[in-house]
View 1 (cartoon, rainbow over the protein chains, first blue to last red):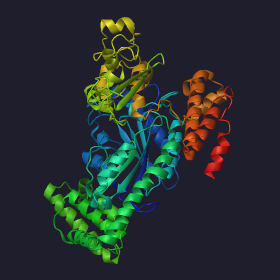
View 2 (cartoon, rainbow over the protein chains, first blue to last red):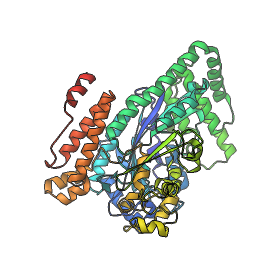
View 3 (cartoon, rainbow over the protein chains, first blue to last red):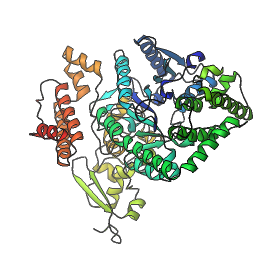
View 4 (cartoon, helix red, strand yellow):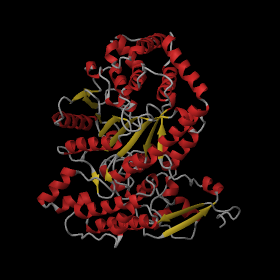
Length: 374
Length: 229
């Protein structure tokens, strides 16, 4: 795999855009299947190989704006390190990396692939996941509308050469009936440290669930939420148009959660500033001097530093540098940076060293590029 | 109102629309609802939703309401082999998909359909489950494959157009459902929602041929515009 292609910072890490103090990134995912083939779980190996080839040819033929282009990766032909790197960069699901489907079928050698729009990784397209095609667009901040626009553009380009499975009543047909209709999943990565501190996070989680939303951890389904990073997404895909779902999420539900978090932050800053200052500086101190750090601990501490920076307590650390560290300290990114396989203890030491270098160099402004380290 | 058990207040009210469009209502207390696999949570995860499909498909209803016609949904036996009693009364429903051979039992176990044809094959049985999973949504609203639609229209391919948009009757049904939702939105003073439904109604009307004339709600436009400023 062309690892050099992933040396730049992805667009979604930039820490800019609407409500970016709370919304780290936005993502839109479209699920599509090709007419005339069984869905991936029921497709034969020959079917899957044909689907893969048809999609690969179509995607690599699509016009993209200079200097972007699609990088194609045959996942059944690359090493585990490469697959895990793509998962950590949020370009595909863990399920797709393993080649396992929800029904337990499949394996590492199943014909499947992913196309990534480089260099900024705004768009990725998984082929032969639970559905034949899963197209996602990601951006920094609350930008679901822009993501949907971009996803729809590539969706139309793919459809120019491929017939989609579509039903007048059920819309875009998907392997799991929970995705049928628009096949559209709108999700945002929220950073909610203040709601956690005030003990209101469970209330928000319950309210989100009551509104029919799914709340997941940093790496999606089944993952935890270290550092109070939560993915919130719609579950309903049938009976509401793309625009209706978008309006609900972008103009109604997410701004409300953002409002709760901002109010909680204001309350902490005005009533418990000393406590926050202590926690934020302690976190930065640990990150600047520790010699061994676990992944989750790093995420928790970086989360506190992020809160400290946004509250005006910690100067000289950019939000983008925190986002970059959140990614660069993940296991496979560390191994890639050091160019060798590491034991768990070696990873913890390497993680601490990487953070020290980045944050101590920071008084003169943190270097924001992952590649500077390698 | 008391629950069917006659002991507690009924707090969960379930309405099932049968295959012949009749409404069958049930009123249960929390204990009976739990016992019979009826959840008060409208957003049930898919695996739980499937594990209660026996109820959704009407079995619990037909068992508990002996003497009432067994027509809520046909063929609801757990093992895809309807009892003699059910078989005699209910129209036979396929146990496996004609397109890919996937059995309904396999779907119930894993929650995944096998191919596009499964939606048509198991339509009666998965329809209610899909409605529950999508807050009552049962008809697609929104995007239609752009190139496919354009090709059908430019080539005048009526049968392909119907495979995308449904026949005249189905399209009219969908329009009517949208009109009702629009009327409800206006009644509830949800004007942004109403504006979107109005746009969707206009879009859907113009998507197909001129067979279906636009028939927006009388006065709806004026009301939405004046309230949206």
